[in-house]
Image 1: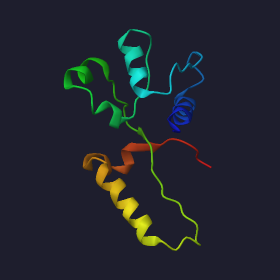
Image 2 (image 1 turned 180 degrees about the horizontal axis):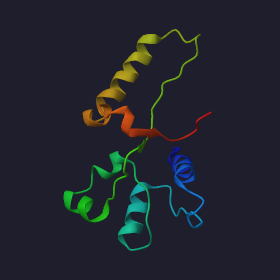
Image 3 (image 1 turned 90 degrees about the vertical axis):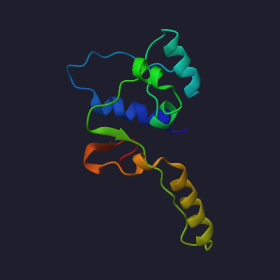
Image 4 (image 1 turned 45 degrees about the horizontal axis):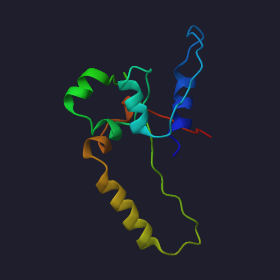
Amino acid sequence: HCFRDQVFQLCKRRRSDSTPKRPLSFESGSLDVLRELVDAGMGVTFLPELAVRKLSSNQRKKRIKSFAAPVPVREVSCVQSRLFNKKRIVDALIQIIRESVPKELLEREKSKIIPIGNQS
C-alpha cells in the first residue's frame, strides 16, 4: 500500500543534478495493470520482486531489468503497543510472514541493499 511513496523516495535518492527532470506519472495502483501498460508499450514502471516472480522466465528475460548494487529493498515491521498482551498472536503472525517470503529474499547480504521509504 506504500509502494508508490517508496518509488518516489527511491527516485529522489537516485536522481543526480545532471539527471534530466521528467515528471513521474502513475496510471494505476494495480501492479498487474502497470505491467500490462508496459507490455503495451506505454512506458516503464517499477515492480517489487515478488510481483516479478510470477512472470515466466521468458517474460523476465525480455522485460525485467534489475537494479545494480546497492539494491533498494522494502522492509516489513511489526509494531505493537507495550500494553498489548497477546504476544503469542503477534509471534504467530511474524512467523507466518517469514514463512511466506522466499528464503533467498531473506538471506540477501545487507551490504548490497539500501532501504527505501521514510527514513525519519
